[in-house]
Image (cartoon, rainbow, N blue to C red; front, side, top):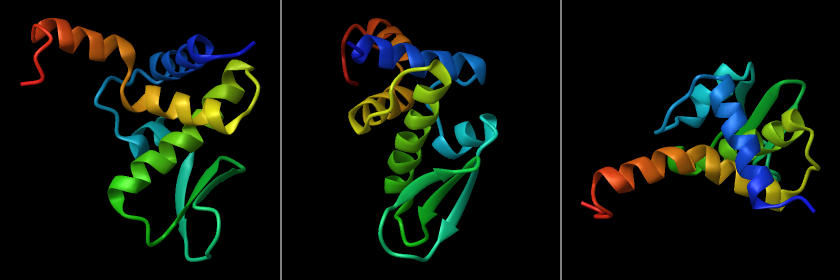
Length: 116
């Protein structure tokens, strides 16, 4: 059964392959993966990957756009790692791309588990 450990591995593999470190700008990561982010004005689905393009609805707030592109990069990472596609998996991988465990744990240790 595919689960969080596999998904975290797919995210880590993608970050390592693109030499990307946290904090990660999802638009920069998409470019590093050879994916183009394009904007459209149609209603409906916010993002989709077609032929190396991530489509984002043009009225999307910049903060929301990072999450949408991360989710689509999650699909890309699952495919790249040979893992089954799922919305849950893409969402999990997208979160791991935005906040990689390795860097998060390093920061937590360096600051003695303090959020400040």
